Length: 596
Image (cartoon, rainbow, N blue to C red; front, side):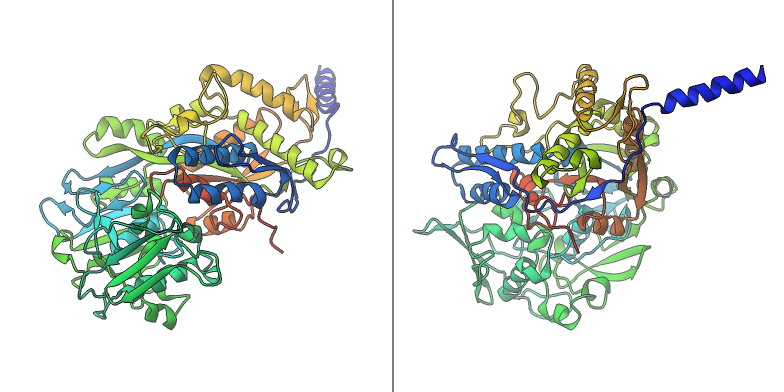
């Protein structure tokens, strides 16, 4: 019996490996100059642009450039859709779900609000009727709190407490004049440009007591837009006349209290930009003294907003103390805010439940159901304008060598686009939101998030894609999942060996999935790993702490990575201009050369 059993096991192993091929490693190929992209704008009145087999810069960048100059709302919307169509055709950006915001707040906390774009405001709060001190935990150590360099939501929240711009948010969460005396009416110029002249309040001060003038805004904006600063959000300044030219931004401090800003065209979201962290003023003297370290040390981090940094115990906490030099300090009700720094969801929740934290911005996913039941007055799910997605590095080649041999660079990239699109169909988004998310998220079939509206108030996502039977770029209905998987197998079988008996691919290369520390991100990674494994595709989960993760993804040192984007303002361009080839937020490396 023993010999028979061994024979059966041996025979099973033989059959298991019949027809199997050894998978090669994924390859890195510089696709930055590949000419596989096309655009046809002739359906949009006034546009006659047709490009067949152009580079990313010759197509996508051009569409975004036109959209930023277009004043007609309908034409601008059509350009936005052309851009999203092209982006989604690459398969690099794989939407999973539309965000909701999960947080826990003490029942004694009053006056807190957050914007749909993700920023949270504590400066108008009280705790049990007192404004003495508040303890919150939003995330781990921020990658940066330099207003020009930050691109993360946690950093934005801290910056918006420490700095104030021309426009800001009042205690009701409404946009109002802040350092400006009023919101100006723009002047339309004969060349189609529009000029805003902001009058600053008199006697404005930095946290060190020195004078703040209009020249500080001119310096800060030109610094953030400069190539040498390499700001991820530098492209936001493209709305200002002169961006990218030798003369630079058309921004001038005409005197200490007046700032003149000329836009290429008057865009509807300009005032929201004025309240965005990248447009905050910074003190030139502080940066000149220590350009690299000024935003890491409380003694050099000179602010102008409601708070200054009084203490920073790196990787432990950042303490913000009320800034008496802020022009509207009397409106600030909370004297001190301690931002505790952690990415351990379990420890963060324990800290809230034992009273260490008054507010937390994340909880373990497997605790969501019980928290909704046991702490209904403290557990919140709010709407957000954002999309959770995964990103493929566009400069990755999955093809086996015997397939790619003799193919042109363009053909290889086109094949990889098809492979990525097929892989995205293997993911059951309904499972992710129902079994992992558990917080009212909805499966995403487009990159621009649900809730982002057109000029007429209609939902942009509702007209995404070209299907007449479902909304978006693929069918996310639970009933469509089986057919999605069958379609994916058919596509992948063109390039990889598929074993009909085991229903698995035998030579698909293994690769890594990069994510930052979070039980939710880990759970989604494990699901993706399991979903791909059903088809013989092996991925290894790689966890990195927040700051390292951001740099790794930004530098393109990955194959597949977790990602997410919250709107910076309510306009589709907030999701679309990040993918131009020069953008610091273009983590997919579209049109980006491989680093030496």
